[in-house]
Image 1 (cartoon, rainbow, N blue to C red):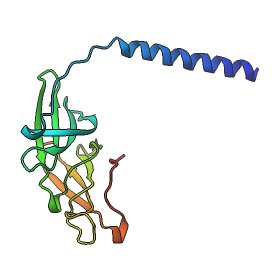
Image 2 (spheres, rainbow, N blue to C red; image 1 turned 135 degrees about the vertical axis):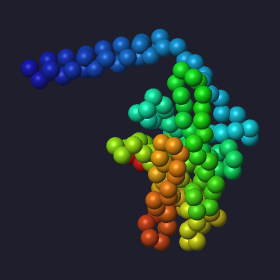
Image 3 (cartoon, helix red, strand yellow; image 1 turned 90 degrees about the vertical axis):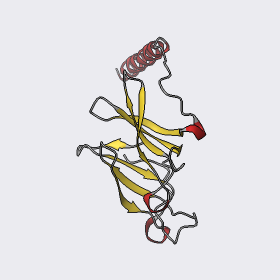
Length: 159
């Protein structure tokens, strides 16, 4: 009986994988934004997250006003990207290397592997931050990483 259940489970899993793979192959892809490097934001990082408001949100590691990365919003259907926040470096963090998450309070949270201004960090501008961003783009640094008291240079996002 156990052998039968194992074979049945494997068959079902293989059927789902094959069906899912075939379905993905049929989906058309459309480029809605090209990140143009030195003329704007560049190096998008992490997955896009559903903002619960009809928009998707993401980050870039470089570019925009200060060259230190951005948090942006994509408006589906309008094919437009709006930069909500440009990281300045220093105490405010810089170069987010993962996306943001949206939590039940309606805000977005993320990390930067640089900036924060910790003097004890080997990086010139600090060992990174944890930040909160409101849907309208206001950012608050919640934590500055310091290797002497708890690590630094986070390269993963919030989960």
